[in-house]
Amino acid sequence: MSDDSRRSRAGTAAVIPAAGRGVRLGPGAPKALRALNGTPMLIHAVRAMAASRAVSLVVVVAPPDGAAQVKALLGSHSLPERTDFVVVPGGDTRQESVKLGLDVLPPGIDIVLVHDAARPLVPVDTVDAVIEAVRDGAPAVVPALPLADTVKEVEPRTDGSPEPVVATPDRGRLRAVQTPQGFDRDTLLRAHEAVTNGVTDDASMVEQLGKPVVVVPGHEEAFKVTRPLDLVLAEAVLARRRANDGF
Ligand code: CTP
Ligand code: MG
Image (cartoon, rainbow, N blue to C red):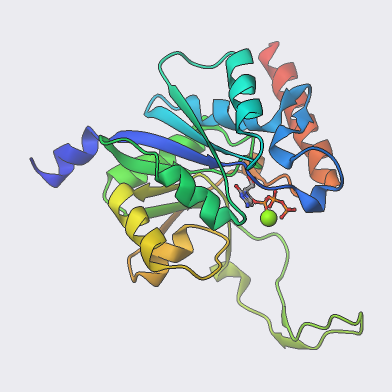
């Protein structure tokens, strides 16, 4: 079978790391279980992945002590019937959580998306664009956006004193990276076996293997819910969608 026809028939799975506490969001339930307009953030994220017709399996990596609760949540919310769902408990770091999700992927899955539960509102067109770029032959694909702010590299100070600026990178060459990131399965598995130092995204592990990583356009609604103000923005986006659906 040619590489092309293998990829065109590839099964696609999404791994959703959802095991974080959400320290920056403040006290409360684990971040992925917090509600947005009455529905847990995780359910929004699962629906966003299952909305892609290419995605046949969603693996949710639950808080270490929350797998039963997450299973119950998936059972009590409406989700597409053509998609399978698996829940596994997560680890101490995002990287460990993703690895625990990859460990349960069945045979027949050739393309893997890794998507933060904390990006509940990514539109399906962005998901499909990432999958398409992997199908077209890229071993690793990340959605990303140009930056609005100018970025300074500084000499960090922890005592609150002014931080000396070291450099101003050319903003035109910088991108803010989102998820879902998409991978050729074998490439991602090899990256997780080879790279063990702390990284904050999966594509950078593939970069460390020396493999090419490409960027496709991200979407402003794929922002990460990190701080309390992000909850306000997420609920506003949902309200706007509801209002637009009414027409
Ligand atoms: N994540 C995970 N396992 C961990 C840590 C993070 O699965 N041990 C997941 C989070 O649930 C989230 C995604 O990785 O969906 C991105 O992480 P981040 O936004 O940093 O979430 P938290 O780590 O939960 O937040 P904070 O860093 O503020 O505690
Ligand atoms: Mg974190």
